[in-house]
Length: 449
Image 1 (cartoon, helix red, strand yellow):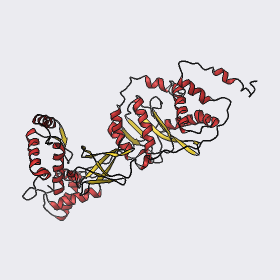
Image 2 (cartoon, rainbow, N blue to C red):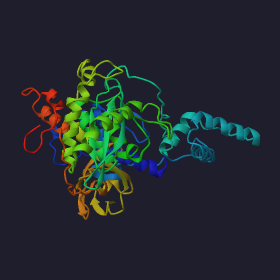
Image 3 (cartoon, one colour):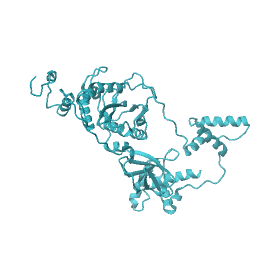
Image 4 (cartoon, rainbow, N blue to C red):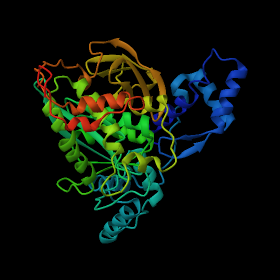
């Protein structure tokens, strides 16, 4: 084995036994932990899932106590390597030249090269090449190509949510932006958020709201804006098992439903906002929620013949993710190299980590609103919370700060459509609104028609 790979194996063993090797555990407690570890599968650094027997785990614990981390690192093999080192190096160069090349194909390329040079050398097998590529981290396959959708309707609710952003009115001198998701089957809006920017933080707020209220979609379909391709969104989808796809740049097929909804928002909601005049973002959010729930979701859709809410509720209610799962999904992550002093630096902060991770690239898991608490993970295993050593930044720059709103004078109106909807939304079952009265002419200040 190469020295680097042997250290990876040693770190894998340490991550597996670190809890069971705690000297504070009783014999019974340690035995229970060892049995649990032996009953599970564990992923080795080369990606294989393996089971480790109880005697082997006990042997690793004894080696750790006797020699520390070095006791867990496999000893180098003595003897002549079976595979030709020069051919392995050639295979690595071919793989890096074109990562899409499979091990079998690379073996054929090497065989062709040797045949032309008239060399009779043993070519490494495809399995040997695969293991070698795995040790060097070269087996990362590119994700599937984005799928383009034409005129299409999902078979079931929550099969597919389409997301996008829309620029809204000027409020307090700033442009408000709506981020929303629409259920492809029912046209219901499961999640939305009004904010000042079209970024990953606001997108996550819209998505999290929808997940907590309407369940988990099988697929999210977005365009290629920076807010929709960032690491936070990819991590949330991975945790929740959501397939994330994007439309091709310049080819917005499949986003027609969300764009049609935005036209409805402009034609039925924003025209009233402009007429009324709103100087507070929170007020805009409250009015939009009232309009959405009391009007849009309950009005018959021209294509489906049903209201979005009726069509969505026609199928059995699915499970919504619990608060702990949602919190895990929307934590952020970053990768950092552990220094020789067992520390990592992040956003001008320095944290102390487990000394066994020195020289490793570890994953930092954190709430972007609280950088005081960061969990350290390596190879999918938690190594506990990092110890803050030097803190100068407590909130991630991408989410730092809330903006004040400079109020604008309200526009005097005769009929306040949004206020009526808001009142109806708050007290829908206790009060009936005489919409016929809205057709009556407005009274003057003296109360005469």
